[in-house]
Length: 208
Image (cartoon, rainbow, N blue to C red; front, side, top):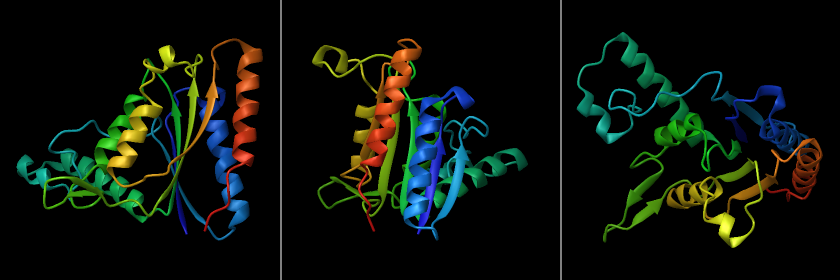
């Protein structure tokens, strides 16, 4: 069993999502001590933003970049490693702070690496997309600065909604979300939000 643990918050030890993902991974490791964990900090080592040269070699469009120099080849190899890590993972744990109503740019760059025709999705006979990553368990820890539970506020929420679209596209039809809301509403609200999220982690069902 392989687990891919991804953090994308810029806040380091002050991050709510980093605290929550650490607890999620710890819970999963206790349930299965033999689990192999691969960790990526997308802030410490940001993925390259998408260009033809930085696409993983498995991406059909990567050939359009032509011959690569040493720097570009290193970028391509790193992108391929990130794709391979995702493909090999049975469980993926994502830490996702909502910045300016959406996901961090570092996480968007990582997503651009793993959305690869023939690897994470393909097209059916009538052109409809078919996800190829439906065998993965994906757990997402999201932190939002304010409350987005009302219908009016939800219209401005483009982190969880975006990830649900992306995950559905690659075949993950039942992602699990742990949400901490109003973490920017003062220390008391932040503590309450973190406690609520950690309680939700305890409710995560054990899955083979």
